[in-house]
Length: 274
Image (cartoon, rainbow, N blue to C red; front, top):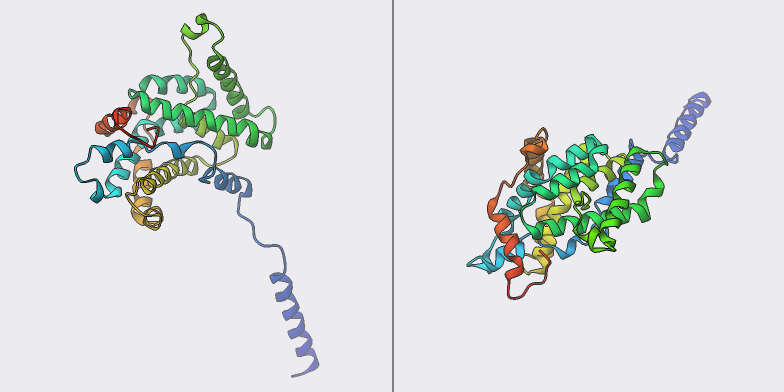
């Protein structure tokens, strides 16, 4: 090999070495990817671990509790969430200025008081996380930031209830989870499809976590369900089926779910709030 060829080979090797030691490739939108990881974290303090979404009541009313498969119930739970709340989530994401209107309408459409309580508890918790942790990452004057702040002000008025007049007055601020989730994810630049998908995935994780604590399945089986193609196809189908549904078309797709959730407070003993 000649000297010139050796120089070319050394130059080529130096180029390869430089390309390997350079900065690692980053996601296309690192901000939204980072925010998506934060909001999909099970450690996010929303209190979802306290709710079984009707699973505990379903098991108590089931004749063969020890042999109850989790997939059929999880499918019904996801279907209920998709048909009742995903249209509100998508509407709030597409038009954040309607946040308080959608919050009020969703409250009126929820028939089960236990479901209503779970939704407002998690929605207010997310709003608190937003104000204390995530709000500073969004520039002032942002539309989503302003509508969330306005809802927070109204909620604080309702929660304080200083006089009987305020307590008896009609309010339009409740703090339901789906519309608040939509506006928070939009403020953090998470695409609408990812926002809705993670919303369903987090619900699946909450139901499976409750199933593990209720000794219905083990932790490895729960992870197997989360990682299965069945769950992915289930969520994709529900999102496609409800993508263009307006809030006027939202409704309970599984009537029995309201019965299971509503009868939860009648159980002799329970470990969850719903």
